[in-house]
Image 1 (cartoon, rainbow, N blue to C red):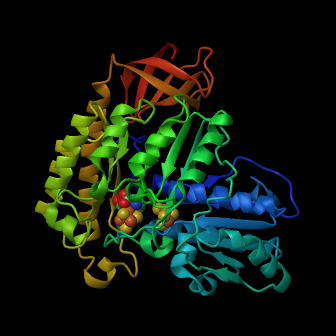
Image 2 (cartoon, helix red, strand yellow):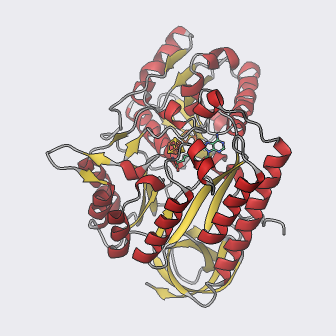
Image 3 (tube, rainbow, N blue to C red):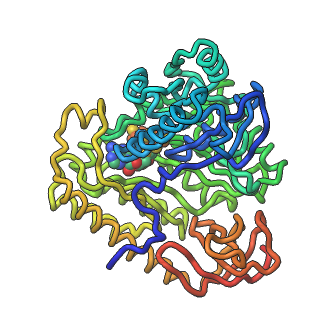
Length: 469
Ligand code: SAH
Ligand code: SF4
Ligand code: F3S
């Protein structure tokens, strides 16, 4: 069976995103973002810092004086995509606009640091994810001296807590709220601890203030972000607020505000957190719970700190405490020394859990990681590809079966806007994070609408609207 085209696979995370707001300033900046939701959220901080300092934002790269690319380093092909893009921009700078300033922000800036200046000649600015407050100075320096400006200092404290982000997605319905930065987990395959630095949590009061102001401005959904939200901890003022408590407090702000989060590491997904899902109607019935692999030895080599059995046990507890909870995952195929039998354990775990959705990747070795230093990337490319294909086919089937089982069921969706295929239809997500499309009628974005599922694909529910919810 061929995977359908509309199931997000591989690097859909790496498609560039753009600010949808524009304004005039002393110099116009075009900002393009690759990578995960954290990077999108960071670009909102970058936009805010620039605006505060008199810079304008444009959606037209041809009218920009400054082009900034917020980059991702998670897999080799994510970096290649950025390098191709930088190549294009460099060619334009040489040919049409020698005054154009080119900047690399984010995870590639952090990973490659000064090396970027040699590898990507004509880059004027290299700025790591903890140095965005310094952007106006760096830009000023690059413009005044004509020399490249670099700040890749990582911080143990920076959370940008006091910076009100320029909302990237001006649909006015859903927003990202970043609650922590960095990661201390050191999974052996992963570059993030190197590009994002040590884990630190943003103070609870500033998170609640930001969510409250979103509610006051009519937002209906927040996605709370961190590389590992479950280890959120704000220990100030004598008492400690953990992630379950934080989520609970956000959920009290307004019954009309739906709350999602990403990403939660299975090792510290607590029963208290599951109970918040069960008790609070506006905390969505959905957890992204990346397993990475289905075999305990592999999980150990990956340094994930849980076994297959512990993970399955957690899934069982989640389903018991929160009936009907929807689960999604991330899976890596072809990690170092993976045998055929170990690969089959991933497939069997997927059959057991029956995820609603999965992001599936081929292992890509990242320099400096534990795996790069201690293991050998020894699964041949064609074997990796075939294993990934098997994983995708299985997930496509399971997703389709899961969606078929929804036919006849009713859900409440939050309308996000017109569907991708037709203006006569709207799209919105169920509480369980499934995308549904249905006739527009007189509904508008930002409304909660009750729908009944009539048909589906592996990635979308097709529904008829019943009425406002
Ligand atoms: N903090 C998140 C993951 C962020 S990276 C978490 O721990 O869940 C998103 C996903 O990219 C990971 O879950 C993993 O599946 C994948 N990934 C990370 N490093 C990778 C690598 N070197 N090769 C292939 N996939 C990788
Ligand atoms: Fe990477 Fe692991 Fe941290 Fe996730 S938890 S960002 S996979 S090191
Ligand atoms: Fe990529 Fe950095 Fe996110 S490496 S996935 S942009 S944290």
